[in-house]
Length: 236
Image 1 (cartoon, helix red, strand yellow):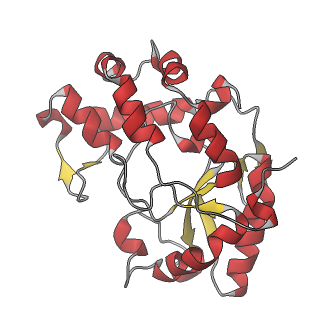
Image 2: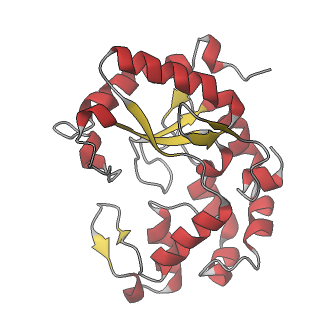
């Protein structure tokens, strides 16, 4: 991927998949469809809640949280008032759950938030919160199924353990054969060029600390496990 693709400022690396109902990287399409079919055989309707998100959408989401127009949560999932925090602290707490514009893995078309649509009423809107995927939660069965099967299709959870700054996200899957290279390619210089003058709230404070923020919240993710299947190899 080039710099524009890595930072969500173009869709040139993506295709629309009607079966999945989303834009995604072509290499991830058939593995995700195959995993969806396998889940269906076990009574799970694996649905994509969120897939590609462009830079502008991520900027709007970031700015709304920075301004307190959308909920901001601490590491335990408790709601905070961002106005009570200084800019540096506000940036840190938003980054626990929301990527910087230009740094979201959703820009790549390789990463997906998923839920089991068969486990909830049609009117239910997934919150994408940890309790939904924990024992007793609506998507407990899906989470356990993914633990057993997702690696066969080349997928893993980049935020499984919270080893960096981002809190664990059991709903977030990544297609490793492509996202692994994208993680390495998205360096701090590319991210800085995307952010500078973009209208992102807190830009001055972000740029002043960008290299440390990049290392902690972009580069420090769970590594893909060893995968041995035809889906776990890069296309081409």
